[in-house]
Length: 374
Image 1: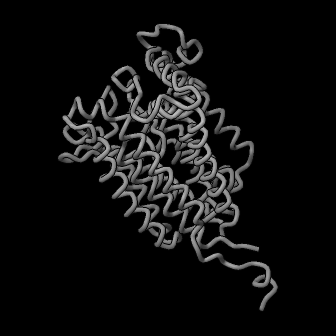
Image 2: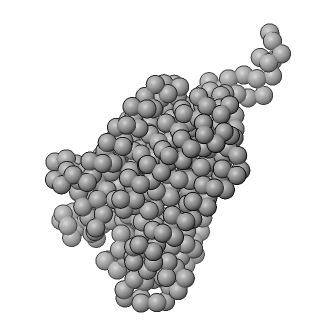
Image 3: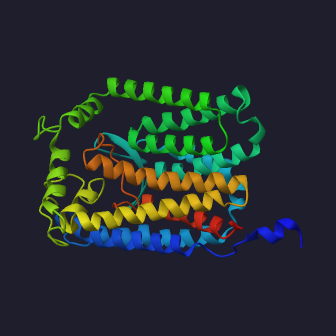
């Protein structure tokens, strides 16, 4: 027996705490969605449970199948497909702009419409771009700090993906993808000067986007002064804060929300956190936040103990994605930062989002099977 084998061994089993946490988030999501979507579901389709059923089939059922597959496939396998999946993703991000194929809603073109099925390519982009970056950085470990060999190619591919997403436009998803990329780049060993340059460029880009789009400036204005124009640009955040405040410590009770009766926009989507707070109260909201914190702790633990550089990068990217997006959604709807329009992972309505979130969790669980223990 070698010295290394005496002190380290491969775990060979899944992180069951992580799996149970994911299962708990799915159950919570279905329960609160069945309530938050009931009113709108009945108005549009004549059934209180249309959105719930749709989420159960296209999100949970397909997502669990994807989770099972990715949790069983050795995570190194994705190296072979990373480049092809990124090319496919870029193609789909372009397809959304084709009339008759891309679906436009509220001035945004983020969906591909096929029959009765809608698909959001940006949700796929989070996962495939993450896998591509991990594969690319794993191959360039010794050149990551180099300007020409490391930074310029990284900034170029990140700019391309960001550009295609901002055209839709979807600043929230673009922000999540940038955070995923920078998290992986940082763990890979990037120079702090390069990270600072990326940060400066990101700030400059956001300021430019705010300047060229009046509605983004309006969101920033409402964030700084929520009382302004409560029946206009400040309507959503004021209704969300009213829902959160009226929930108190223990909430009105499951199914007893008032704001979901067409007072709060996107009650089953981006604003669902406010409905949860109204119905379940502050104490149970803390329990939901605790689930995301457990997921973060277990996810970064997997990254820390991953058996190789590639596994470390993927685990870091997946955990950063889910946890940052959860923070961004909850902080925005609570008035702690400007509204972003992104869903709460595992909770908000959206089959594409849940499908790819569960697929990514499967990859994370597969990495957890190979973690090394002292």
